[in-house]
Image 1 (cartoon, rainbow, N blue to C red):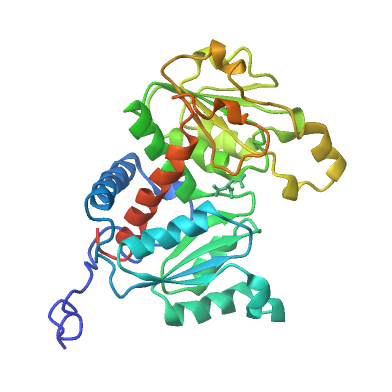
Image 2: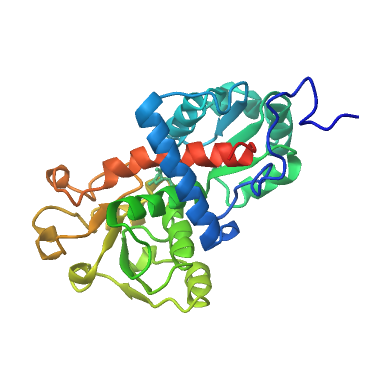
Length: 326
Ligand code: NCD
């Protein structure tokens, strides 16, 4: 039997020996510091290619299934754009109510179906651990695009890529996470990922009922990263290099009255930001509701719109990696 690289049917076969070929991306725990540097290198090249040529054929003929059981604008459209900029195509399943999910199909069966047609599956699902369940059922790579309040690894990768592009380094940083640290999956992934760097200090500012889960804090503590919790931003804002603002996750509250109590807890505006450093950046995974005033958008430290664009390059890199083309 000819090997794939000799096969007349696969003249442009993928590199099956590449480290990330065929792998699932379920958690930031899978990424070492070296892996991150590799992802950032590829993402940086993707940025250059998009700026120079827009679209190119690295993943020509490959198909992505974009399976979203929860609302999404940025994650779903940036994965679509990433695949199409690399010359591939996308099966979009945003409205699961119009798919067989509404007939009672299980997640593993839906995954088994989609992998017959696609080379890679991006999954967003309301239950923690769902991406791992999908990965168990699948032969093709699964990319976790948010599993309930669990993790959002591709967001944390793009968040750290943003920090790198904005500040030029990921060591020696004081990072302050603000808002809903209990239900916000992006901060669960980001805190874990940042704990792989040197001389990082993490501040968590939240209402008492929305504190960072103990499980995440325990994991970060194992890496000897100093962490401190606060109810108010005042004390820590002047020392902050990265302010990571999050939306209060209304849809995840068991009691709507609790949401009402904390929904407007923090608002970042030009006045609040007067005491912050000149050289720092404000990030937000978006969508925002009221936690960052639009009056702050023109400030050079407001990096959240650039952050969305960086997401495209990181997702291009990840797709190329798991499909053996990087
Ligand atoms: C985040 C998410 O879905 O967790 N959004 C995103 O992917 N950019 C944050 C949020 O919904 O608040």
